[in-house]
Structure formats: structure tokens, C-alpha cells
Amino acid sequence: MEKKSCHEKVCKRCGWCCTSLGKEIGLSMEEDKKLKKLVFEGSGVIYLRSLNRYFLAMLPGTAEKLKKRAKKMGIKADIRPNKLIYDKKTGKVIIYDYYLNHTKCPFYKDKECLVYEDRPAACRKYPNIDSSYAKEVKDFVKKNKIDFSGLSYEEALKKCKSGCKLS
Image (tube, rainbow, N blue to C red):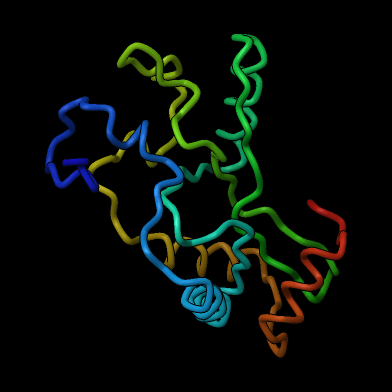
């Protein structure tokens, strides 16, 4: 029987988290859209990827570092924008974080992390992932005085996808 997820309290270095990216969680397309809309209404965040799959998110600095490491190592790493926030004041789209668009981490070879010292925070914390994400995003929006008030999810999504200047 296939292991559905890791329920360990301490990492056993089994590789499940590294080899299970992209596995479906079980949301319908309608549930995915509804959840994305709820997230937007609470935080201003627009998700570009489906919420129906496991993923590995990383902050912009980590994403850049891993892109450079991948190039140097000859590894194809598809690192894409994950969460966007549209700022009405400036008309800019802010990339809050990125995700690794793979079904298996390209940095995981022979049961070993090839970028262990530069691995994303989510990897460092796993399996003890906390739910501080919502507070972190709200703090980011507040600190940067980002205004998404009065925008519907559909408007913000359209602005994010229509080629707004990414910053």
C-alpha cells in the first residue's frame, strides 16, 4: 500500500516529502477556486498553482539561490512564482514566494539532499510545519502598506495574469 503522507513527529529521512511533490490532495476544481478566493479575501494573496497538490514553497532569496545552484550542478529545476499580491496603489504585482514545480525534488538523489545547507525553510522544519503562514503574509502586507481593498478575487487575478509589472 502506498504511503499517503508522513505522520512522523521526527524526520526519519525516508524521502517521502522529497518524492511526493505534486501528489493530489483531493480538492475538486470548484473547491480549489473557492479556497483560493477565501485566501485572497483574508490576505490579498493570489495563488498561481493549484491547491490540490503537495508543493514546496520557498521565499524569493532561497528560490534565487537554488536556481543558481541548479544551473551550476546541471540540474533542471522548475521554480515558479507561487503566491502573488497585487498592490492597487502602485499597480505592481509582488511575488511573495515561489514553488518547485516537480513531482520529485530535483535536488534529492540517492536518498540524499544535494543542497542540504541551502534547502528551503519548509524542508528545514519538516515534519513540524506550523501554520504561521497566514500571519506572516498579513504582517508582510501591513509592513509594506499594500492595498488590495475593494478588489474582488476575479479582478486581482486578472490584474496578476495580465502582465502587470512584477517586482
